[in-house]
Image (tube, rainbow, N blue to C red; front, top):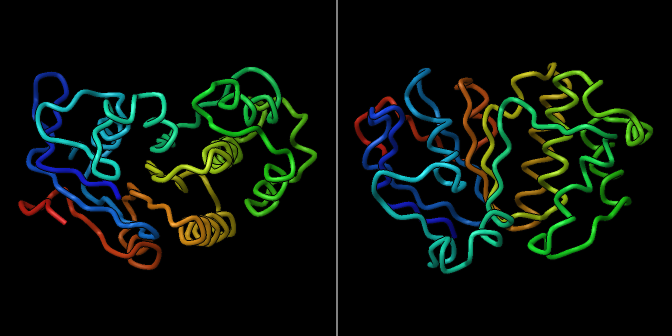
Amino acid sequence: MLDINNLAVMAGGITLVRGFSVYLKRGELVALAGPSGSGKTTLLRTIAGLVDPAEGQILLDDRTPEQHEWPRFRRRVILVQQRPTVFEGSVEDNLKRPFRYRSAGKAYSRDDAVRLLETFLIEPERLTQEARSLSEGQQQRICLVRALLLEPDVLLLDEPTSALDASAIEAVESLLREEVTRRKAGALIVTHDEQQADRWCDRTIHLDREDRNA
C-alpha cells in the first residue's frame, strides 16, 4: 500500500536519514525506533508531505502524491504529531475542523465521534469543553480521534502514547490495532519504548542501524 524507496531526509543542511525504504501492508503496524536525533519525526513529516525529501520516492497504491493530488494524499496519509495540535473552540469544533474541506470526502459523524471518544476513555460530555483546557494526554487522544474520523489509509503516529497513563496506553494500543485491522489501513509509529514496539507492532525498523530497509 505505502511504498517508500531510498528516502533521504535532511534538516539544517544535515542528512538525518539516507536510503530509507519500507513497504507497509494493509492491516500492518510498523514501529520506527532509534535514539533522539536519528530523524524519526522528520521522516514522518516527510512522508506526510510537510517536508520535501532530499531524494527518494513515496508511493501510495503505486501512485505519487502528485498523481493523487496533495489534498487527497494528505487525507489518506495522516500525521498525528507528538505535541497535540488543538485549535481554539470546543472539542467538537476541533473534531469537525477537517470536514470543512472537500478533500475530507465524507461528512462529520457525531455518533462516530462519541464512539471513538468513549473507546479512548474520554467522556462524550467533553465535546462541549474548550479543547485547550484539556490535559496534554486528553488532547493527544482528541487528535487521534480526529484522525480516525477521516478513515485514512495510513496513520503516521509520533509517540502517540507519550503523555498517557498506563490504562490509557492500553486502551490506545488496543483500539488502534483494532481500527487498523478492521479498516485494512496501516500505521507507521515512532516510539522510544522497545517493549511497546514488540507488543504492539508487527515489526520494528531501527534507524540507528545501517540497514534501514524493511
